Amino acid sequence: MRTSRFPSTLVRFNRRLFVAFRVWLSFAALAFTATGAWAQAPSITFLSPTGGQRGGTVDVTLNGAGLVGATAVPTDLPITATIPADIPNNGKEAGKVVVRMQIPADATVGIGGLRVVTPKGISNLRLFMIDDLQPVAENGTNKALAQAQ
Image (cartoon, rainbow, N blue to C red; front, side, top):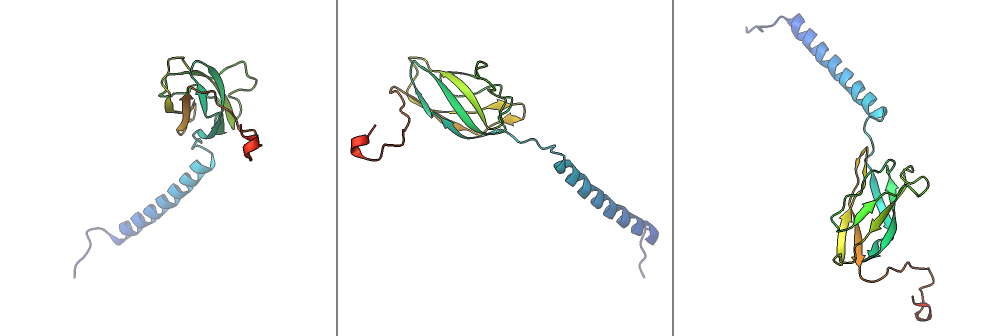
């Protein structure tokens, strides 16, 4: 008959220790997630307006979640994007932030991406268009030929 190299009490102790460790680890994981230790990264759901004319300045409202404390707007477009301090409560609301975009007159017409940086991370990518035409917002009455914008 073959015998184990370890006494049976030691094997039982190790099993109990392993089970206790697994229970502790489960509670620790639950407590870690329940305290909000995982911060919500910012996200942009939509922006308005979605484009701007060359040689102009446009205030773009980024709507989403987790946008409090926005510090920068990285983009691959040849524009200067800043978060203006002259707009009341700008960057202090979780659902929106206004970005002032200065588009040079010699900027290439095209579409590029932009993101928002907050202390909790970097947002998803949204598209913005540089155009040579002035953007026109839909007024809601554009439903018949006689009312075309």
